[in-house]
Image (cartoon, rainbow, N blue to C red; front, side, top):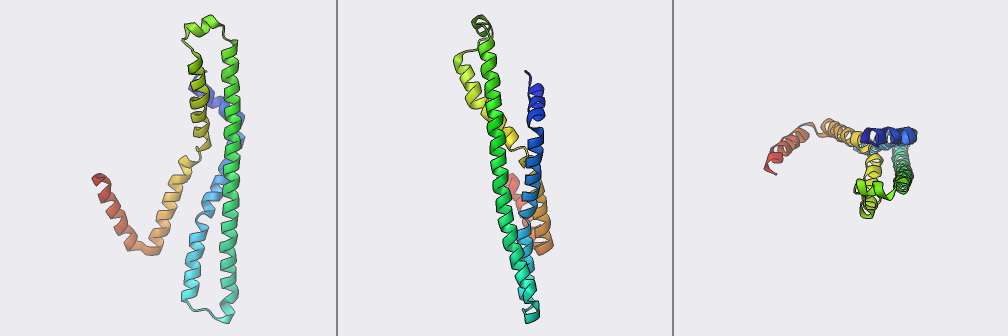
Length: 177
């Protein structure tokens, strides 16, 4: 069973679940930026001076901030639980495949391919865990760059020149590290 065959089998078995979890990751990533944007709106609201007629706007902004925080926490927890379930199901299936393969091999075949009990144990304890962790965090491959880009855009929109100066300092410091 080669690596491409393993990846195809995992996608065939868990592709829909991984895609659904990806949708949760999209929502969680989007909601992670709602709080800072709403805080900026609240600061602007407070800077403009609060009058009796503007009070519903302030209450709405604070309610949206609280609601987005609660929804973000719920979706994040749901994402973590669902990825843990997929990871555990994947680990169980891979362990079952390894053990059924090992049990079906005659002792002579195990000696021919130099498969010892410790190698089987290593497959079960380390390698299967690494494969399932890889698929558990696959959404971080796209979510982290998106978060960095959106954070940079929001910082630039809010503090412009100071943000660009900070980027220049970071770029200068990279080779020095």
